Image (cartoon, rainbow, N blue to C red; front, top):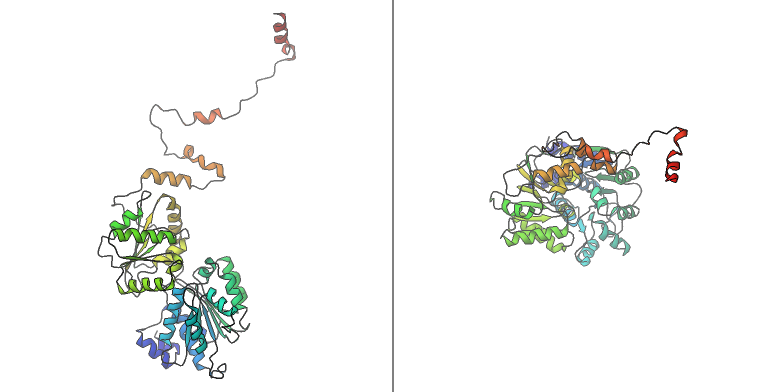
Length: 451
């Protein structure tokens, strides 16, 4: 299928051709006709499936086809609102919409936190048909009466599960309350936790459901591997790994912001160019780090999961999980950032003893074992692996975790040691002695008193 077959207007087709879009991705192929038909949409898709164009292209067309009834006194009204969880994702979507709408009369603007509000106020004063925003800054501007949402016709909630994780769900509800009840809603989420499912029921009316690349599947072209490391050696292994010059660009995931900064400092000590990107960095610092990484000036970008939302790099050669995520779906989202645009990709993960349960959950989700790299200088001892396996073994009660040692058939004892069965016998209560006949009850007492 081609974009021409999706009944897209010539001005947008011209822009897509200029941006080297050739054929629609599965989510674009299914979503664009539904949105153009005015239907609500529920999209379950992970990062890298092309969902930005899936909702942006039809929105631009729908708004372009209108006779601008909400445009009075040369002031543009906000007719579509796109909510996203992070600044990077908002800016990325804004850039894409500007590219898709470059041959139309549609005007868009992005408002995000972390930068001067004055610039955003000027953009709002000039007017925008499409507003892309993060919830926090949008709430601020609504409270200041600088944003009017009463003309919104199309609402997009992108990365809804991540907005829930970041604590934005209540802000989202407050924002929705400022919009007309009757509107078209496009809802995108990689996962469907209970809170998100409840929100869907209150927002969507008979939606078209589009589910692309189930979260349990991973791209076959991504080469996955795992390093089981003795505790405290992740940084050493990362330094050693990055000596390989074939790793042209690497996105390294850490669990915490502090961890991202620490990994970046330690890489700098061994002359590996790296920058960190996370929530404590200013917007300018984050954009600078992302720009350097995309241009190749920085070889390694170290990021937390939340900050990495919105990083869209087609030629990313490696994803490295410095810390395994405790949510298995997050692993799939992380490694999905490599192997894009038909290219091959490599996903490498580090695992210490406390993360072995996470690894087990990940392998259960993706339905296969991740190949282990054994030829490295920091292997996890077999003793550590077995100890972790025993301690994480499910049991019927909390105290039962100490029992498997006696029930495992492979726990043979060296010759000469006491059998394991001798200890539990001492813990059994002694049985009561048999009762004496009544004639002997006081015999002992009388003998004692006669002495």
